[in-house]
Every structure is written in structure tokens, then in C-alpha cells.
Length: 273
Image 1 (tube, rainbow, N blue to C red):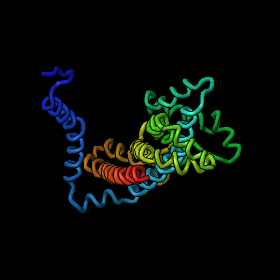
Image 2 (cartoon, rainbow, N blue to C red; image 1 turned 30 degrees about the horizontal axis):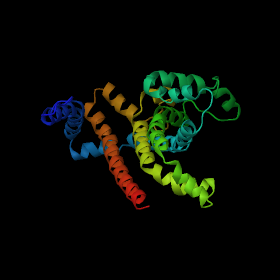
Image 3 (spheres, rainbow, N blue to C red; image 1 turned 60 degrees about the vertical axis):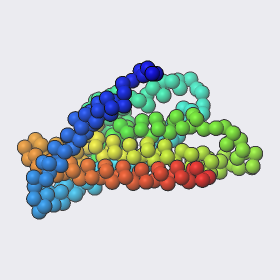
Image 4 (cartoon, rainbow, N blue to C red; image 1 turned 90 degrees about the vertical axis):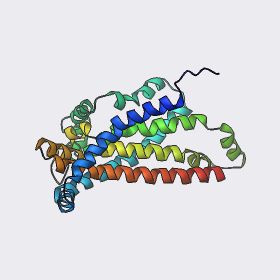
């Protein structure tokens, strides 16, 4: 009988299920149970209040803007790291993971210091009439900073594995660099891009520490949903906090389902192509 380094299937499955139950299912179940303690009318009144709806709008729009920025900048950064060799490349590659290692509160304080009206970046922008700190623009920057690695790290390995012969074939057929990128390379990157975009958007939706320091936290203007949930917790209004949190939870599930559907279609298109 062949020896196995890892334990058998039944033991591995049991450990995995217990881990998932404790880390994922139990907290989500407690959240849903607490929200369910509200009646339908009370639940709808809480999640559809003017302040809650305003926080959804701020959170979703800022997260969307940060994700679009990361799509362009993250793809360009991954491309440069894979395709070019230059002094300091390893340092830049290591800095991509900085938001993972840096506590989000520290990131928020650093960004606020840089983009305040008297900061290194904020002062020149203020001279141009652009205010960043304590505005939705500051929220977008904080979200983009914390979620950028998801785009880079999902696209980078796919770029490294691309067969150069595909680009050479496109060049031999007279295709321009842009035509080769959009017709050959981009379709192959689409599943990875969709995965990175979904992770980036989800991280932005749930970001808290980096945002609260630079947002200003003004209700109806710069208050994100995660902060409103925290405020309800501080008020010991646990059902309201859970109800608002379930909105983010449902948004995450919908986004995950849509992303998986788009990825499946992109993979089928790539295989057929």
C-alpha cells in the first residue's frame, strides 16, 4: 500500500469541514440569526433608512471607482513586472504586497497624513483646488491602496505562463501591438482579471481601518456601511448592526455568483477560441 504524506480523505475532509464551520459558517449563521430576530417591517425600516441607503451609495460608488482604477493600474503594473527587467524591480514587486502586511489603520493614518491639506501630496492638490482627505476621493484612494494586490497577484502568474508563440503568431500575421493585446492576450487574461476584480471589489466593500481615518465619516456624505455597522454596535443596537451587515453579505454573494458566471463564460470563450 502506497504511503501518503497527507492524511486520508475522510480525515482531511472532516478537518476541512470543522474549520469551515467554525471560521465561516458559525459567524455568518450568528449574523443571520441576529438579523432574523427583527420582524420583516423592522428589518426593512433599518436597511432602507436614509442614512443606511446613503452609506450603501458611498460605499458602492467608491468601491467601484477604486476597482476600475485598480483594473487599469494593476494590469499595467503586472505587465511591467513580468515583461521588463529594471533596477529596483524586486523592490517594486515586494511593495505590491505591502497592503497585505500593513495594518489597515496604519495605512489610513499614513494616507491621511499624505493627502491632508498640508501633506506632501495634499498641499499641491489643494493648490489646484482638489481636496482629497475627508472626501469621497479619499475613500477611493484608501480602497484602491488596500485592494490593489488582488489584481496584480491574480494577473501576474497568468502573464508569466503565456506562450510567447501566440504573440509571435500575431506579429507574423501583421497584427499591431494593440491588436495582439486586445485579441490575443486580453481574452486569455479575462478569467484572472475577473477573479482579481471580484476580490478587489469585495475588499473595498468591507474595508474599514484604512477608510475611517481619511473619510471624515460624515453621515450622508462620507460614511461607509462598515462604519455605520460599527456605530450601531457601539450603541448596543446589535439587531440593527446585523441587519445592515447582511446587506453587505448579500451583495458579496451576488457579486460572487455573477463573477463565477462571467468566469465560466470567459473560459468557454477562450477554449473555443
